[in-house]
Image (cartoon, rainbow, N blue to C red; front, top):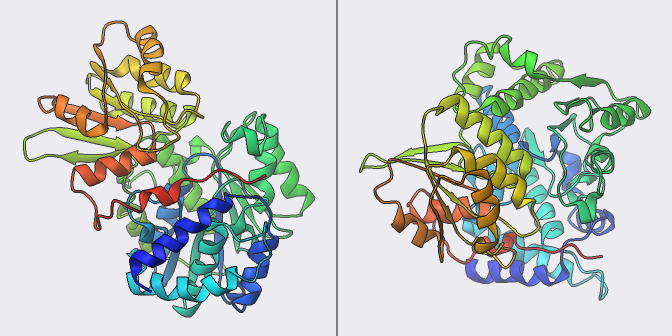
Length: 427
């Protein structure tokens, strides 16, 4: 099997959609020797900030000398981004080997019950982390939490960033229902830490933690000003990232008896964290500033607006915006359009893209002064802003991934792997 053939097999699993439930994942885990039982985890769920929080946790524990696995999704460009050890992507050879191992196991499932792409990849990651003897795995949920494939593990701590309305057709149409799904990662007696806000899921999470007798810690904005965060220049910009960092500090301190981390390692890890595509600032050779941010829902767009007003209060950037049609694009336009000196609307390279022409009215309502252009593609939009001193690309991590390829910012370039992010839940 070649790497291309391995990727093609993973593509073939997409026909089974993405379904909720743990039966397949437990069965696949058992067929591979239950590798999760050899590992320690910090499990991270939430609406926004999961990836950034995972990146910070990984950076801190790696700075303290541990061999740390990192499992995240979606990937920006390469499938290999999803499975890393000490921030090194899994190799192509290891992907091939693991796919070759799991392919015959998938064939053991009856028709109509085949493992999905995410279920198979979850077990591949567990196998890899176990055989590579990771001392800790930072483990991000895919969708939801309670019935997400990642929820077969019993972690050292359950971390929930925040709760907002997303994927409501699958997770529920209220904050309370969504919070119940996300809080489903909380295990009996296992510490739970959250930065969810009152009235935005906190009460639901706290109630479930109490029911499961899980030690419970709440993190809020007041803690972003306490040591060590009062003296750290966090590479990930914006108040929302400082709240994520406070969540990381609380988690590390909660687990100090099991995994001691020196204050110097905590500071070093936070100061050195790298997580592309989130308030990711690039300075081009021609003097342009380009900011990439995967703000992909209203809460993410609002967090980006606040961060931009804090750091670039007088700027009037050219904003390139593309979004999926299942998102509340009107709210997102209302957050971002008023900041723009110029707005370029583009499709996302996905079947799920919103028609950019449908975004014009919301942008014009929010900013009647700014010129608005509908572009055929992101490449087309970038061609139109070659003279702009400040450019923001936002609205979808898929759009950010495409931008990273076009701007030659990726470690690997494979045009055929972003489609692995595409899925539709299977009923």
